[in-house]
Length: 313
Ligand code: GLN
Image 1: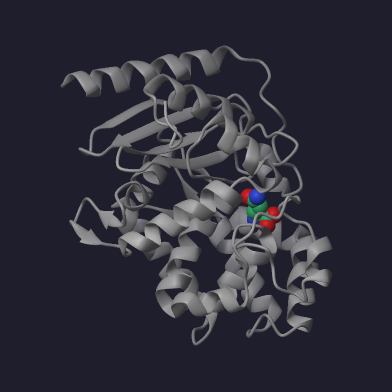
Image 2: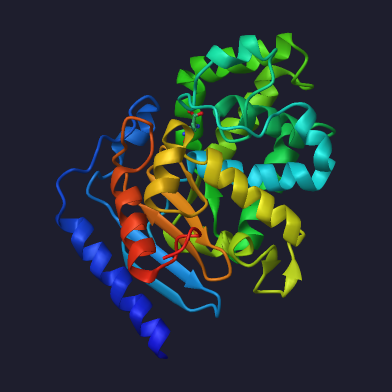
């Protein structure tokens, strides 16, 4: 193990130990009843550096519900499918509103502000679904995750998907509202079915950090050396993660952590230090914006101790 690897190991272990002792863990999501069953004391952290070295601590191999983290990968797939035409039906501005807000949609004629709020992600899912059966579209998303993480064992937690489907009144409202403006091409129940199921993909921090490597590596998949996306696209996805990845907490995340990141209400966050590392953290308790409380604190500590903020150490 070289010097940088041992520093990385030490910092990751220190942060996991510090987080284990904290009591201010936030609240686990309950609006999807199945998510409320998670252990609020869980914490995992994994960093994969540019050489492929993996530093891991805590519950780093426990699969959890990735929820909105999936939106980064569906955005990547949709851009691959239709390119810049995607921007005809979804914007690229931070919303400053909660992830499930409906208020801007009326004023902006059914065009969601960005691909990471729920409305935007549902529009992105609709784009992936076009020309396919829901089962095929979902298979494509799952296989993409397995390919990026280099792990075929990744699956969908059907209990979580069913739980969200039963209680997804807000997302149904968003989808129906967009449909009324012609922003969705497919039957609302098909699009929502695919959306709920890709949010219910279960992955560990280790699998997520592996899957995020292409964003840290300017579009390349280090396992194959081949491009997952072009360099310019990786840069742009990172820009959207920085500005919109934490909803109405995005400014605060940029201020405190200074890295592109994307959260999910399962308590996971992926982030990356471009050229340096892909990171995944998991702590199920959330803050008022629906972002992992300890996850953000852990990433702030990591970025600070390693001098990784994109704005300078
Ligand atoms: N599936 C969740 C929802 O639509 C995703 C939200 C999130 O992770 N922020 O409400």
